[in-house]
Image (cartoon, rainbow, N blue to C red; front, side):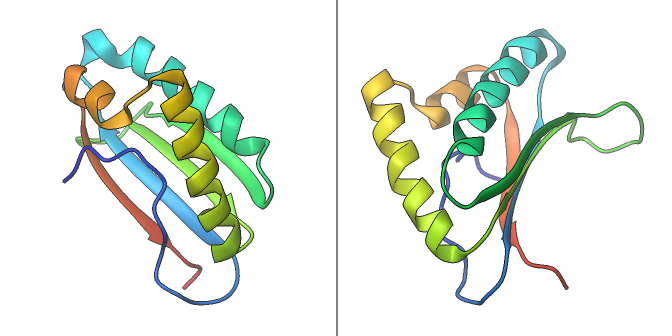
Length: 116
């Protein structure tokens, strides 16, 4: 598990790329964490190549992960472009996603996926 909430490049292939980030968020940090993830997802939705971006809050089941973000990108190129834009935006805002999740006591499991 890592606390890296940045966008990173996936392994090379063609077609849509999915970024799935699962988070174990303590109850006391959940509202603020979800609000921040929604802000980030709104930014991503406005970037070229973003097909969809969602923040999901667990309502049932037994997983340790209770918040999930899902972003579908049209291509690896879109992911690479978004990575640079998001890094720049975070730097301008003084926002450090790793520090944010660490301070909130959040654990994460993140990765890129393709349709099987």
